[in-house]
Length: 478
Ligand code: PNW
Image (tube, rainbow, N blue to C red; front, side):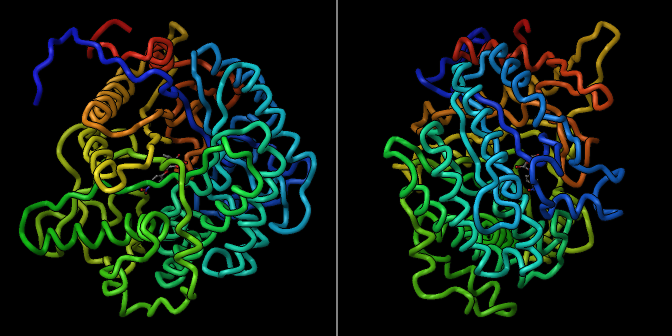
């Protein structure tokens, strides 16, 4: 589009946050320490056949014991923000009742370490690790789980509200509902599309109850939001069937969250699309109003665009859109939609590299929600990284990936999108859910035998961007 000299640099707005992101179950380990009890991910990972290689988060990257070193690493990398999640079953083991002091102490110590290092903490209350007892009581398909989540939000808000200024309720409720309860490739591994739609609703409700609880617990300066993995859906052709397939995926992938949380209602087309599965009578009067709470920001997690066609289109791609494999669809009432692999480069996840999807997504959000500040709360890529004979990890593909996506963010900012920060997924190589330790997303390499951390070339590159607030010309020196 606009011509720029190859040497042009791109300056980000002052105060733009440069962060990295992690999640409790993926990094902490210490699964049975200090009163923590199993979450659905402990149960799932210990169930044979569910996770690659039988890997579990029992030890992970031992962040529970090494957090001081990890914060020092972040500081050395010049990061100004860090997004982490709280393990619900570490601070409230049964998912109800009083807090475990030692669990809260861990997060308080982590936050204090961050603040001492000049790094702004961004806390996520729920990154998929439901206490197993709550799943045994029915899990997210049941309303009580949303109520428990509101209470848990109050508990954490009261404990850490004096020192954490940025809060997100849920991380990627799409994954919790549809990978957890429909395709079953994530915990708890159920394969019931109606349960998944019920879960989606109770995640929306739980989000709203948690926002209300946080507003009551936090000082007014605190920002509260949610992180969604919105699908940048594109029809394969402009044929009406393909365009309608994109509409349906947008409904059950994106507007199922954006509707209740930001507009105060479920989209009518979603109700029509899913009518043969459910009449949505589990949505009680007042629920969508409860889910519709004013938010201070929307967190956007983006990895790859989604290309779809109607059944009977061209060559079918991965049945689940390249998101986990498996025999059951994560798309209730849209099981017939065909997902296509766009041409071009892919990451080790098989996800195609296309930063234009991030630009388009940000511009859509800026258009539809012009008042809502945005953060990129996750973006990054897995590659087959190895420590070379020189002791370094050369990952030029990850540098190119992050570069192109930051360029897209910058272009969106120049076009008027109010993007206030970028959190690279992830700080460290870690437990990549159903893929175990096989897929490495970290800016920092972890040797899983020794727990030795080695910043990859991309970490050094990202540190320079974070320090200067400026994106260098592509192909520049690293
Ligand atoms: C996100 N999908 O996972 C999570 O928030 C992270 O915990 C995870 O490690 C990271 O992205 C990389 O995978 C996703 O199927 C998992 O659409 C699956 C999907 C999206 C995001």
